[in-house]
Length: 307
Image 1 (cartoon, rainbow, N blue to C red):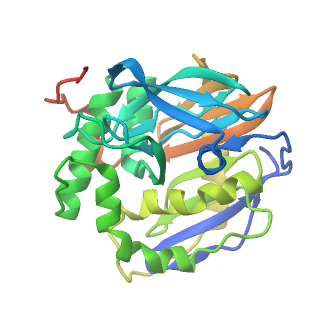
Image 2 (tube, rainbow, N blue to C red; image 1 turned 90 degrees about the horizontal axis):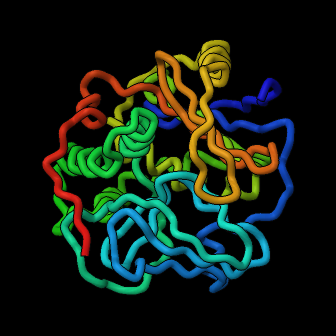
C-alpha cells in the first residue's frame, strides 16, 4: 500500500472524492453478487429454520463469489446486509452472517435479489465498531437505520433502509453524475467539507467499478449538503491514509476463503480482507463525531427476531 496513486480531486458542492489507483491490479477471477444474480449463478435463501442473522448462499460459478461488507440483499423474510466481506468458494453453498435492514417485516415477500444499495456510511461504521468491540452488531445496525430515518424526516412502513434510499434518489443523482470513474481506479477517498470521512480499496478496477455508485450513495445519504467551499490538502490526505494503514492490526475470524484483519487508531477503524496474500477489499471509516457516537454505543430496545 506504499505506492497508492491519488488522482485529481472531483468536487461537487461540499463533497469531494479522490480516486485511488493501486500499484497492483489483482487479476484473480471472482464473481460479484450482482453478476451472480444476473447470470443465475447465485441463489440466496433463508435457513431451513429462518433466523435474522444468517442466510444460505449458493455459488454455482466456477470462480469464488465476492460478497462485500454492507451490500444489501432484498426479499426473503427481511432485507439483509452482508456483515463482512466474504469469498464463497466455487460451486459451493455456505451459511453467511448478515444483519437485518428491515426491522418492521418478518414474512416472505419474494425471492432474494440484488439491491442497488449498500448500508449507509454511518451504519457500516457502527457495525464495524460493534464487531471489533464484541458488541451487538444487529442493535447497532437497527439504531443507525432509525437515526437515518429521523435525520431525513422519512419513515418507511417496515423501517427498510432501501426505502430511505429510494426516497432520497432525486437528491443523489447530481452527485452520481459529477463523480466519474477514472480509468484504472480501484479505490476512493470520500471527503465532506474538506475532511476525510472514509476510504475504500478493491482488488482491481473492474470490481471497483461495480461498487462505485453504491459507495457514493452510502456517504451521500448521510451528508448534510451545502454550497460551502473548502481546500483540498493532498498532503494531509496522504498522511491520514498512511496513518490509518499503519494502525494496529489484529486478525479476526473469517467466514469463507478470505482472511480478515481489523485495524484501528484514535481517529478511525477499518477492515482488510485478503485471499492468498492478495488484497480483496479494504475499508476505513473515520470515527463519528460526538453527535453520532450514540449510534454505536446505544443500548438498543429492539428485540432479536427468530421464526
